[in-house]
Image 1 (spheres, rainbow, N blue to C red):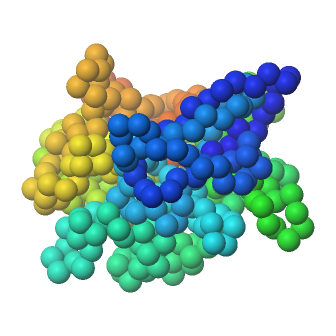
Image 2: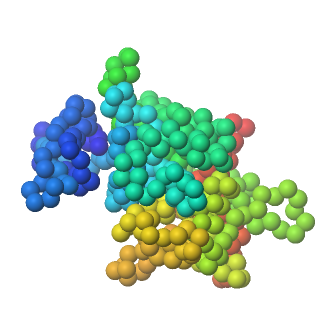
Image 3: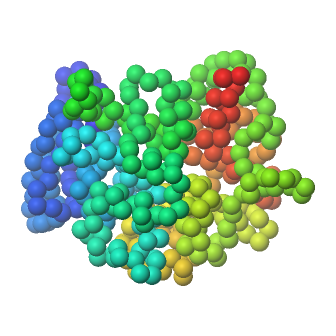
Length: 379
């Protein structure tokens, strides 16, 4: 966890709690000089530890996981913190060595659902992240050579990289997030995790710039149906068009997870019998299975996508989480309007729908937008 900004000399006490057990628990960050501070057991709760640190004002949070942490605990941490990805820290090497993402948990859940799997739910209590990463290549036979290469090394950026370099780093390596790491020493020791960069954050900077100079790039006013972005529903007679992956709410969760991996997409529109949009199932939805340990007693082939989405919904919410999962646009929307929607926190893709009927016509993601923008810059 990294609190990197100071405001004056005022320090504010902050309480940190670790509720996932262990014999000895330590906290580290830029506020400790990246040295380990011990946390003390919480009275009356043998699995919880706490400590109080004096921090400068401001909210700067990056969560990193120890590679020796059991996979099961990591699963719960990502769910509790509401994040789909976290960098991995190896204390023995003294450096960041990779990331744990929602895709890892999809592969784990598929492995648990396979007959003859040698990784049981009980073993998740002791099966560490590092052990999972080592076995990932063998467990997931559908990874391409490029994905395997990426999974073996940490894709990251430095604080001096410009936003174009960060965007290219993300696109070329097929990742959703890159850690921004600063090493104050020449040998790369004592690395500091400053930030997690994503395409949405970069896009927000671009939108801020083009808001004040809208005429500097005429393509921004063109409708998205007139430019080469997105994946669209094939029309009659169109050859060699990549089909848009969609599913019904009655399809199984197993079918959704398989399609996410096989089609190499991050989300799937859920439609009714008229192909009208009902919901969206994305990779990050897998962390909902950590709620109440649902992963321990569900069958991926028997639970429907509708039921799986309900697991992540807040029953006390007045408007429902499904509304927040579905971000839409029209084929006639100008590119800049689409960019503004995609730059909002938590939005990674827009479902292109027909006005009125909400019939799904396509999907446009952050990666499509950036490939188009980078192409304009290079032309």
